[in-house]
Length: 199
Image (cartoon, rainbow, N blue to C red; front, top):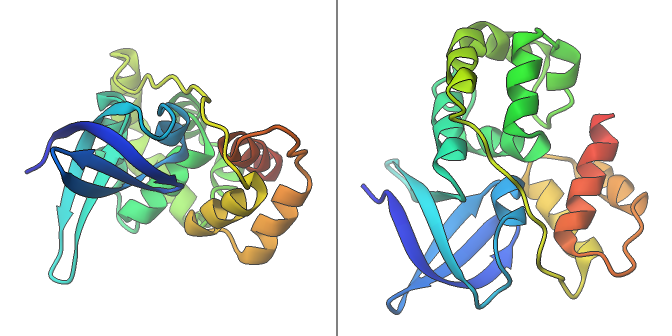
């Protein structure tokens, strides 16, 4: 089990990361919350990880803090929620917002997450209400997000990231088109586009 890696951030192509650890490049998938919190390419990163092994693939997921990793692990235990959808959930709203929406049984808010329909939203509420409520009281899911890096082509990278998170190409293009990109990083464009789609 790989529980944590410390190394140099070599590539940042949301939602994928490449981190060099003693000459070995580790490919990781991460939520936008974690990506917002990373330093520019070339900086040192510390990522708490979840390693998933399947018959046809080995996938490493990276998180900027243990709280987000804990929430990810809770989410993937829900019937019908795989790692990709769990990352979409974590990218679409903060941990605090997710806990609040589950506690308030807000199906409408949850169905705005890509790939989450009414039945899945209801399942999330039923299966997570008690677990998330108890964890929230212990502040297990606190995850501050900081924007730092400026990308060369934020609009294109933002569209690619939204598609990777589960949005249709047309939805991603439309959402990004509504966001001013002058001087903005791809992370800022993605965050604004997600907020626009979740309204």
